[in-house]
Image (tube, rainbow over all chains, first blue to last red; front, top):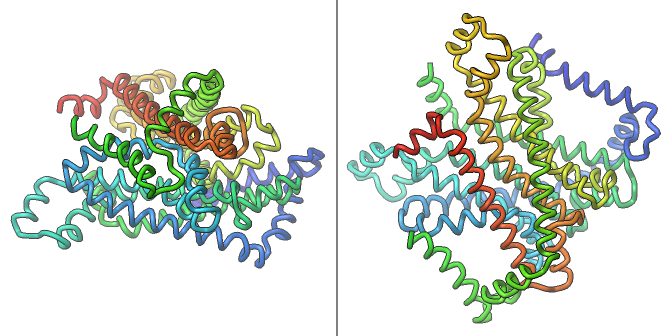
Length: 253
Length: 250
């Protein structure tokens, strides 16, 4: 009970303050929250959700999943080979440092402006944190474990499945978490630059036509989406890394 | 070292060879990108754009760090405040900063303000969350010892909380510095605020491909420089700290 109160008190207070303070708002750009909420219900109808939010989510999922698979696969390959790692690291560090949105114009040249372009944009931005974290995780595999498994003849796929991936998984998950927020940013950006549907496209469309309450409702929806995705990620992480968190807590106390 | 350079050399050769062999159409060879880069470096407009981007980056970062550190220390030092704000922080943090682009356009148009809004919003949470972790990491024995010796709240902040939180503050600054550059360039690219991003957009729409690639390389180099600088600062200011001392001993 007390916990629920603590969780909800400040959000409720902020909501009330916003609602009350904006009630008589004459400011064109900051309409009353009541208007925004009404616009939210009118704007994000099931048809709208199907036409604009689903394609966005589809591209996000496809790009993110592809980046995760690519990043982990390449990361294991690079991380397990010392020479390759030394040669690849400066190049990878450079690509990671390029702000991903500047790749949008480049990828538009190669892939046009269809769904493929957006998915490639998301992959090209998300793959680096996953890749570099996987490299780091594979590199830092416990030496004793590594030698033991080699002595017992655990090689090839078994080595990957039972040693490298589990050992690197906390790092990989950290990389995936970074990649998730990049993926959302790139989904929105790629739709703002060139698209005919999607959340980013719709919100910019509202802004350009000065449909301010609708624009606000889109911002709120994007915020909710970001929140829900990060909560889902946390649940997945708790499930996947339960053994790791348990181990850490046990070694701490 | 030779291995490290060979990777870069390989990339440069690959980019030179692919278009020359006619395998990729929309990619100019390395030599032409480098020529375009040299041409750009001779113009004042280019340096003005770099200056604009770095100004937005630095200003935004300073504001975000100041706000994040102050907010983090205040929230972190008062347990009640921490408990009551946790859900709000967890809710606001994952909101993608690009969602604010339309709002920034309406409020500030294509001026520095819209870039700053996005940069500060994105960088602030990185710092705040790290500072909160840092304050939570305070050794209870040290804290209780300080209390037993009747340290004033200010002295506890200065001598117990701050040194514990400092490594986390630096991690936060490092993350925030990288994110701030991404958002600065993004805002310029999408909104058209002055800076490297808008110059890239112009180069793209006028079909000046080598220039566009050269400018993208510049943003990457800026990113690398910022990462290296942040890591260097971290080592320099935390040379007394366990984590850095252990690393240096190796």
